[in-house]
Length: 243
Ligand SMILES: [Zn+2]
Image (tube, rainbow, N blue to C red):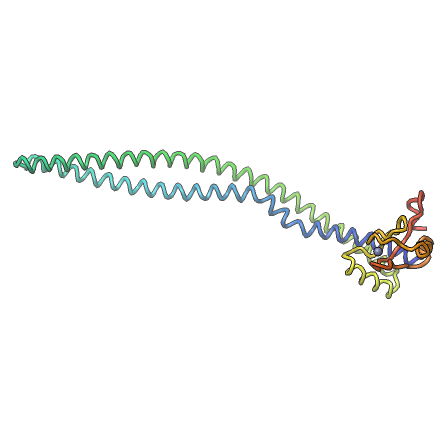
């Protein structure tokens, strides 16, 4: 096989691996973020419950004040009861007392509902806090694992780049330039196999005469359509591409 073609095949293999490896590294931040989602969700529910509890406690304090005011009013009304001599005025006074009694009773009913809501929200907060901790521990473990994986992949990439340097040092400048131009126009696949008289890059059927030349692997032949560099692997002899 043409030595340069042989190097190009090796270079393509390495570059395909490098591209895959880079994709993995690029995808890492969004992978980490997606694993963080359940924790964020749990935190959000927890924070909302906390705000809800603060609102309820404020309502409770307001209600306590309101009830205290009404009770104070009631005391004053009752103190005045003995001073009223006129029957009509007394009836009106009794009505007012009844009204305040009703107000106190209504406010106390509302207070009960608030107290129940506070209790329910405190229960939710407690269980949500446990969930947040559970999600945090789970996420930290996954994140650590992913970060170790990224370091491993980055080391792999470093090694691939070193291998790439060794190969490119052996490739002639103009051939390398052609390869790099093709890498851009073909989105990373510049050197492809010609199999069953077909370019494996663009599926073009290769004319028989050209295919005979490609089969010999003696020179670098470009696909007439996609311009990729073509090589041939002898049938039943896999691994012979490096002959
Ligand atoms: Zn082609």
